[in-house]
Image (cartoon, rainbow, N blue to C red; front, side):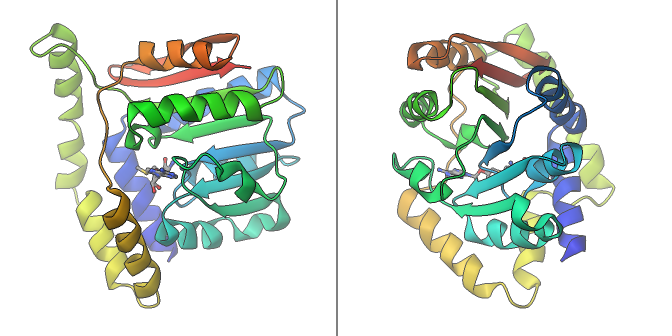
Length: 247
Ligand SMILES: C[S@@+](CC[C@H](N)C(=O)[O-])C[C@H]1O[C@@H](n2cnc3c(N)ncnc32)[C@H](O)[C@@H]1O
């Protein structure tokens, strides 16, 4: 299983140029602004990539790793097991307004997310930000590290961002599995047929589509409207961003 987890990291690193740097700036911002933080939520945390980095960097912090995908969550349980009761695996859908009930009282002071919120339609994203504004304490922080490629057709920005994305192909040519190949490898492992079938049933029922029709400005304005006192862009590499909000 550790090979499959390592292959996930390679696959995501291939899709997201500078993914480590993108995680790193969030970790640094947390260390500078909230060194005494105790509880962090990783929303759409997958198999726990961001959660693991937080747990390693901040030994006093506990992390709730929330995702809708039971197959990735089963890998998250293994990936984060060494952190014992500092890790909580949460099976919930961010589109359902009652998802905080699944946190078992682990109320976060900081919420992070990586490469996940573009799976939510824009209306659900606005509702999520309203929910987060109610959930986070005053001074609480939100960081969304995500691919936000909305740009005018044929614009300079689109051309250079797409040109940069083409670098991904180099990694795949060298043998890093792409998204489909990685899921194929997972399906071939013994012991996961049930969770993979459950994943497929959930996504068949609700749809599983990327929504790439929102800009960074949409995020920052939605955060302000939802009740965050400050929002902005912390980091950018072409059309890949870290957007933040301060409650
Ligand atoms: C590309 S993966 C990124 C996972 C992880 N954050 C990372 O950076 O490796 C996107 C994740 O978002 C999750 N996701 C998508 N829609 C969701 C929803 N409505 N509620 C919870 N998680 C969701 C997916 O199941 C998946 O784990």
